Length: 283
Figure 1 (spheres, rainbow, N blue to C red):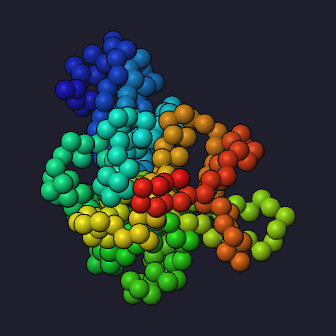
Figure 2 (cartoon, helix red, strand yellow; figure 1 turned 120 degrees about the vertical axis):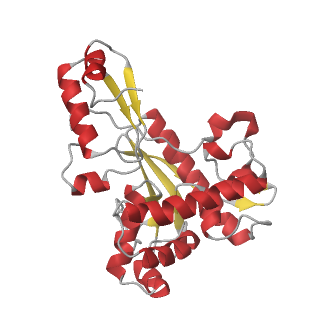
């Protein structure tokens, strides 16, 4: 254990090229100042983990610009799970690492704890939202919108919240890496295209916990949404890990013609993907 406030520990780091791992969910501003000073005065390297810089940015904290590399960690990919990957399990339970090898009851408790402790309570304790009751109503509804075109007006009516508040809650979910906004492809000569983004959560298990779908079989319609969400996120994970110059979109006309996922590589459209899910047949 190294304490940056202790002179002896600091001196050790000045003479050590090893890496120091820090695991607060959101590094404190004072810690970032210490890391900055040590980066300037020593050869020490640091690995800082966290789920959001939103509060730090708002407080004017030192974000180590030009001195840090950004890497995103995700739930397990299909490739990482290898032979233990099971599609039905992944669609309903997700692929968060703590769930691997757990019995269904333990998985359910773990996901419930994540939703109740982190999504509902810690986000408010960190000052990211002020109205916990409103945010709780928003969370109770948002999982059912996975894979939908983002409609803050409809959700604000259901949650009895102002549309601007709902928009800010979506931004909190994005900043804390809970959600992904999939923009619409607009680089087309066609003018009658949908321009609003789609919305996905980062893990199917969290989605099913929010929507109370962890018991029994998934109904076909919701299973189709989860199938699409899982493979959009799987594509996002692989792109991040490959550090590829890539962007994801969807394409839809006002008449309802749609391509579920477009992959742009190095500024050029590379892939167009349609998702189809049926029992015993997935494409």
